[in-house]
Image (cartoon, rainbow, N blue to C red; front, side, top):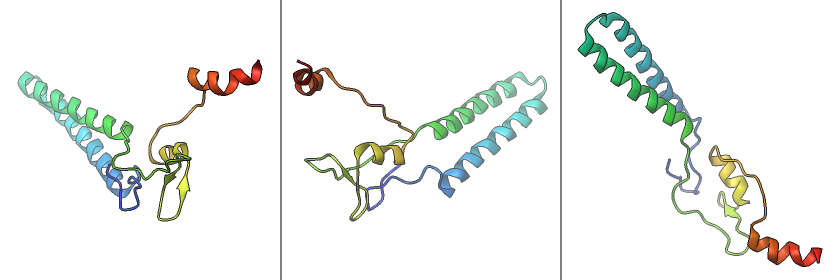
Length: 121
């Protein structure tokens, strides 16, 4: 998925993506019907089975892969990302809105030593 002029990635639920998902599902249905009609033609069954596996992989990848691409305009100080012409959002919010990623927060050892340890001493 390529970002648009504002840096935003396309919506994974767009009509184009829905059409691709529907086309892949239709192809899988057609291949399954052909497999049932192929009977004992083992060469044809092998070919159809391979095509069916590929179609299922494509559909599965399409449903699970969402990625961010391109340059992200990010503030050097606060690390917020420009999500539009005037809107800025946190890195976590920006990524969560444009992908299937979710964030959990923790403290790395360096930040623990720098920010937490001095307060507990």
